Image (cartoon, rainbow, N blue to C red):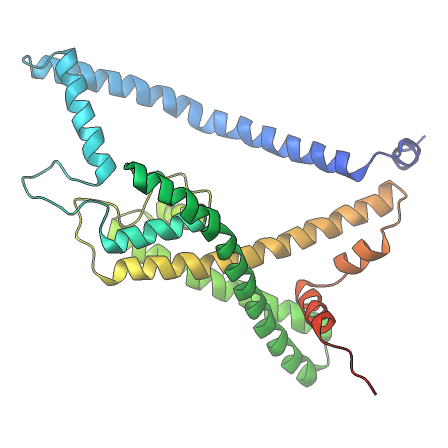
Length: 305
């Protein structure tokens, strides 16, 4: 009995296969991160313990309790965005521009974790602000994504009329759109962050993706170094980049989901002997811009002749 007959006989649900693939993907990623970062983590711990021992040996007046107090002061200063390298004072994190960027990270669910409200009123306001802001952000990003798809569709239709090649034209338009988006939301910000923050190019591109994908680890955060003086336009550029970059990356992820769904349908038809449902088949067989076009047409009132 072959593999195809076994799967056809067993009638394994596609959701089970998809869940197994997802679980395997996560576990494989965990193993790779463990191998790549585990040894480095142990080395970092040993290095920090050695530095602690050297510090206590050099400054004999500083005991363990004093070191813990100093660490508390450093941690508190870092949390509010103050620098301890000099005697000058700073505004901290909660300036108007940085507060606006923080509000953007709340509604976009990025959540770096480098700054957070500490007052009771601020925490309660943050809850209600996110409660209404997150759905609003999703609606706005969805609308912006549809406008981007509409622009791609209009350009594609114009070129199709000139070339009479539908598939090649759409592939070319999508490719150009992806490349332009990569240049605008990854390459150019990478150069800006390298100049303003002093990061390497790998750190800058890592920060770009972690931010726009709303993962937001918080290990790298732009416009948050208390030892640097940032220009006034930097925060405005950050907020604009986050908003439009999220819309573009969401569009790219939706296209990737469409490709995975088509692949899943193909595997079900080939190995499971299952036929796709009419609704899912029609949705998966069309490109996202075609789906948006049909959705808009369905909303139009019928024409009475």
